[in-house]
Image 1 (tube, rainbow, N blue to C red):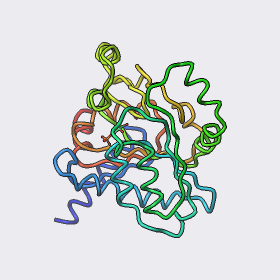
Image 2 (cartoon, rainbow, N blue to C red):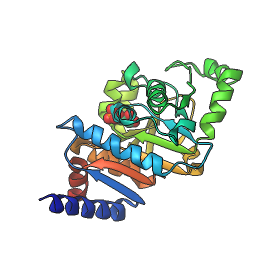
Image 3 (cartoon, protein in one colour):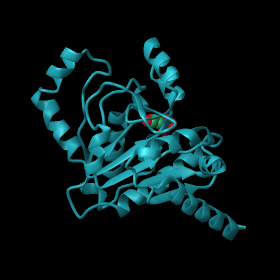
Image 4 (cartoon, rainbow, N blue to C red):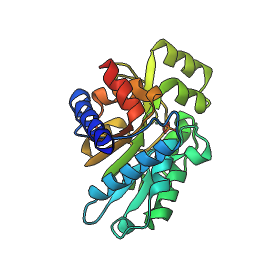
Length: 256
Ligand code: G3H
């Protein structure tokens, strides 16, 4: 029975790699929509992938928010290689609750891994003028410089409507997302099913086009309900590693 499970997961991984055009795919057993422990398994797998991709020195790991990346943080343990790493949030606030914010997750990761961290203190919603003067602040400039030197990015992928609702999105944006048929969300960007950007939450930090110069980009997202979102986001995105679960994998493969 064990052999069969191993085999099935591996064949799903290979099929997903080919069909999604992602270099490396890991599928953990189960569906995180149904069982919370599956998220932890994705977290555990992600920790292994992080360790495997660390450079000898100068690692700067940028992380996004969300419950899945929070599970990655939970699974981190002190490690001699990670001890030298610096953790930073990938982007400023997106309207999430504290426990789901990139800043919080980044601090947890550093504490668990015994690494160091820097936070990005910017309000979630700022006017254009306030935003332009904020980014000129020396303290913000120095953290932004670190974020832009990230050697690794770990991010979640969300289902558009779920994310918009969870983040207390304004009515006009909700209407826009509906009209433009947004299905996926990552980094504060919303995408339609062809992977095109249909909306961007205004905040500072890493932008999609910054990802091209980053060595290791790891997407962690699972659950059958995220199948369409994962597939849509990966059409145009540069993530090289996808860590997902059987629930999402089966649903994606059934539709491809
Ligand atoms: O950007 C995507 C979201 O952060 C994913 O959130 O992991 O709680 O589903 P989640």
